[in-house]
Image (cartoon, rainbow, N blue to C red; front, side):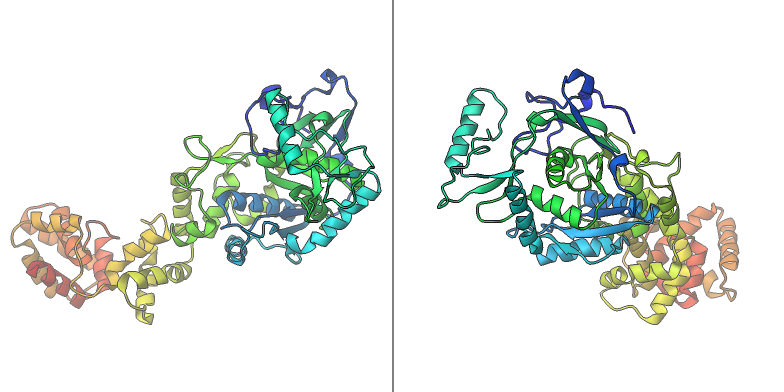
Length: 517
């Protein structure tokens, strides 16, 4: 295990469950050295886990798409389970009924399917387990590890106001903790009777050992007055019932771990191993947002034209490393992945690096697969369905097309000139090349091509070189206007390979169109 973290890197356990804060505040900080506490310490570590199969889980809330950060969390959980020959489970935390939607659930599953993150067993839907969660809360109540709290919302707000005025930590004061004079005709919540003495240390597999005084953990609510469970209760019960051995999640949940651990110990259940992964930041170091690429994985597939294997490789290297390896296959990732390789500092999302990585995977991809992936994009741009001959042409040209592309959009756009009907459109660069060509050059080029019988790329290049020599110019001064005329662009795959693929009649027709235009 890693040593205790320095004070400057600790996470304050906010008593009002502001769980995402990573800044130092006026609240007491988690201690990092048990010897300085003068208190008994309770420790949880991986060594306390019973032997047996590793079980991890990914537990998204279905309130939107599968976020790129969530996808990384799912990937790390999946790889850890596969590395250890264990199980990777999926739980949909759909207790927020106002925001949870079937469309979001479908989007999450679709994103995981695209990334090939297959889960084991049936999907667990948290909302359907509310009765089980309530059952556990009442068991704790009967065992004396929880209690009824009749404090009204107005009372609790008055308490918070008084604490703010006194500059005290905002937390429930336990006013019903030891009372039994229950007004049975009034609504109540069930609160955990959290430990007040001592401290607890979590030997986090990423963050290192983090210690918190138990006095910082308030008696949080388990069951609301309407009988519905809180997040804290539901997560603990579900993790236990699913047999989860390792909780791998974002470090914005580190505060949660101490509350959840208090509940786990009250229940006498096995304690999971915790690993809290630093969040992803933008390239500028700021919190990841849409302007940095904080989108759903579907956007990377559908809008940006990324390959699943490229996104997977990029997410793997976003906060985890294995030596200097950058290109890592799925099999290598399973063999190498461990939590020791996860860094403690936030990762920075770099779109350019992702695009470069995607370009690598494009060049390595099967040509037929790439045709299938760009077919819809090409058809939409052309305004018609692709024929079998269109697909055959795309596959024939794919080895050259993919050399210049960094994503599927580039690949699709770069292929359009092959399939467009005459006269083909000219972009600005092509128009400039045609305007700057030597007078009569295209006419003379067309005449020479019209007399050419050998329509191979090599023969066509020899013809162009001979024309350039007769014109007293460099080859580029002949090739570039020709490229503009037959492709409508200043850039394309190798010109003479393009001419060969298009065929003599099409090339002569396009040159004629350029001359007429």
